[in-house]
Structure formats: C-alpha cells, structure tokens
Amino acid sequence: MSKDLQTNHLRPGVKIRQAIEFGTVRFFVWLLSSLPRHTARAVGSILGSLAYVMLTRLRKSGQRNLELAFPQRSSVDRDRILREVYRKLGHHLAEFCLMPSYTPDVAQTLIRYEGLHHYLAARDQGKGVLVLTGHLGAWELSSFYHSLMGYPMGLVIRRLDNPLIDEFVNRIRCRHGNRVIHKDDFARGLIASMRSGETVGILMDTNMTPPQGVFVPFFGRSAATASGLARVALKTGAAVLPGFLIWEERERRYVLHFGSQIEIVDTGDAEADTIANTANFAAVTESYIRQYPDQWLWMHRRWKTRPPGEEGIY
Image 1 (spheres, helix red, strand yellow):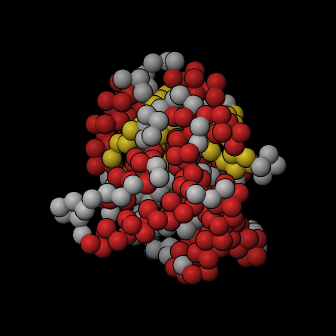
Image 2 (tube, rainbow, N blue to C red):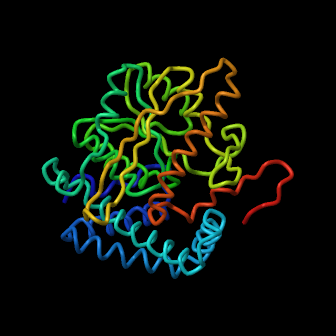
C-alpha cells in the first residue's frame, strides 16, 4: 500500500469521530485506487449520480444557480447540465484517488497541455505567476499534473475541518513538489512566493464576505469575489493568467488550458484598480464556465453574500 494510504496513529487532540471519518475516507481512496482507471471512473460516476439524488439541498442550490446563470435555457436542459456535473465530479474523485500512481509517461497519455507557452513566458518574467483558476474541470488533478511535469507550484487552500484528512489530502497534492498556502496566511505567503518568482494557483470562484471580497459582476449578477489576487498582483507585479484542466469529450482526455496573460489595470488608485482587476478575473472565469457549463461546481452558493439592502437569493 502507498505511503499516502497508510494509517495515521491517533494523535493528541484528534477526536474519535475524526479518526473514523479519516478511516472511511482512506478506505474509499484505497478501494478506488486499486481499480483499473476506467472502472474507478465508472464507480465515481455512479457515486456522483447517487449524490445528485440523495443530496437534496445541494441539488436545489445547483438548480437555483443554473436558473440565475442561464435563465434562457429550459429546466430540462439545466437539469441535464447539473446531472453531468455530478457525474464528472465522480470522475474527478476517481482521478484524485489514482493520482499517486501516475508517472509522467502515464499522465501524458491522459492529459495534454494547451497554451503552455503562455505559462512559460509569464514565469520567465521573474516576478512570480498567479494562476487564476476555479472549481471547474479537474482542479485537483491540474496542479498535480503540472508538478508531475516538472512545474511545482503553491496552492492556496482552506484547511479541512478534519486534520487527519487535511494532512492526507495535502500529502497527495504535494507529492511532486507542490506546497500549500493556507488561507489564514494568505497575504504574507503569497507575496513571499511572488518575490521568489514562484507560481501559485488560486481558486477564485467561491462566495466571499467583505472585506475579503468585493462585489463584481458574475453571470450578470453582483457576486462577492475574493480581491486578494488583484491586490497581490498590483503590489508585486506578478503575472496573472488563467489555468483550467478541462475534460475534452472529443479527445476523451483532459486538457490543461493556459490562457494568455491578463493585463493588469494600474491607475494608481489602489481600491478602484482592485475592483477593476477582480471584475476582469471574474469575467475570464465566467467565460471558461460558459464554454464548459457541465464542469463547474454549481452546487456552491456563489451569490449568497448580497450587497447591503439587497434581498437574499437562496
């Protein structure tokens, strides 16, 4: 059994419930990782379909979000998109369990780059690279693949509530040189990384609350959006470019898309520039989601935080 799947000894401060949760997760990861890839993905697809049926609250959130984003589409079409989201999340789960077994040669048969030259050009500027990404496609596999191919990076993440699972997941993420930057040390860690010329990926498509978030348009509706990426880019001069690992149905494999570098607005008005750049980043993210609507995490309550005086959406 891989060292990533070995049992942790129960440490002081770890609750029995957390140990049971960890054991359950570790067992399912081991189970999926022991299957051939096509079988593991099929099992993941079944689990995703079951989650669609059983997790009523999340399904309703997804339906509401799709209604907000695509009011012109029929309810049948929106439901088809949501069902496919769950199925692809099951595939993503299977890929995460299999990641420790992937070698560069194996991975290159499953994934290819598109626009790698954009990333290399940004990196070679020497001021650090901020990869704008989100919960679209196989986001966990994207940074893992990039590190496996010789380009390790930092990952801005939120600590999981269960410390055993958090440590376990991070061991897999960081197997080939990646490192995690926790959100509670976000600004300092990110600025230090840029000054060292490193690359950091930031998931920038989740609901935030002021002052960490500013309101910018997202699918035609104000959405509280993380402003840290824009603030760090303005402060350090780091390059910002989009990066998303998408399942391409015609090729039957994943493609890691790197877009061209995003021009940063810098007029000298720090707050106005932060809002303008955050709006640009949100627009870029939206453009990718519109291309691949059945691969975004619609179940997240993206528009939960509302501007003062505005009625709640959910």
